[in-house]
Image 1 (cartoon, rainbow, N blue to C red):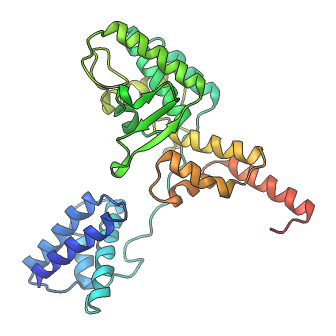
Image 2: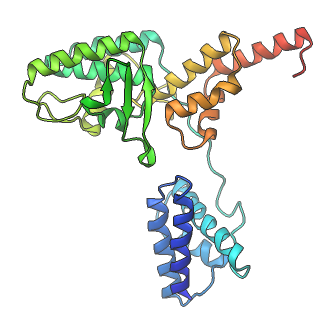
Image 3: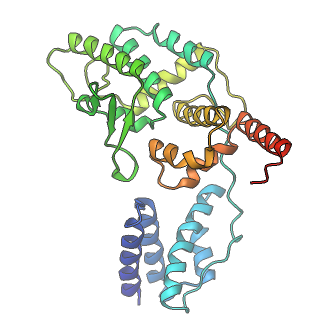
Length: 311
């Protein structure tokens, strides 16, 4: 029967991956879960066994236990549709998931301060690279890994496009750029090519030695820039970081849409596509990510109420 569970696991993973999920961590955990069932001569998934296995790690935090239970519940639900003898652990056995942390949102002044600090870095190449990286993150909302993964050939100055090839789940997408961004990136490329006429790397953005950037090193540099710029955490869970530039881009885009009177709900799929979100729910989260957005939404509702618009 455990051999059958492994076969079912392969089918389950293939089904969900066909919907666009990577599931590398899920696969690793479910293989461990089935291995534990084999060791204990269990042939069906039961609630008791699921809870016992989920709670196995010593000193595991609540978020890790919740995640383990979520993975098991998903697989158990699939098995139950094939054979009702498999039990599905009910919700609530592990404390409910904590809401997403409030993201740090940068003002234009904050970004200008970060750029000024980048200009004080030791080498001219490092100054230009970090400033260009911050600028691209701020105006495109790309993920850090996506920016680092850009090759020079992914930038199309003639059409003002970036091709993001290293997005989540291996997906590609095209990002149209503002002419000012195209000009800035072109300027960086000229400086880069003068410094390295014989490229060491195919990367668009390079280190001071010409190699592709490393996430860890850039993160450390950014943390230093943020401290020097006087940017401080607003709460234990709301700290300045590179990924917050993505959140800032999304929130500012939504604010612009609210303020120009457009249909935000109709435009959200465009933002979702631009950001490379797998699920629209990830984009909808931004609607409640900032007080400014809630204020704009309330303002629009007030106007509708004044007009008697009940749509």
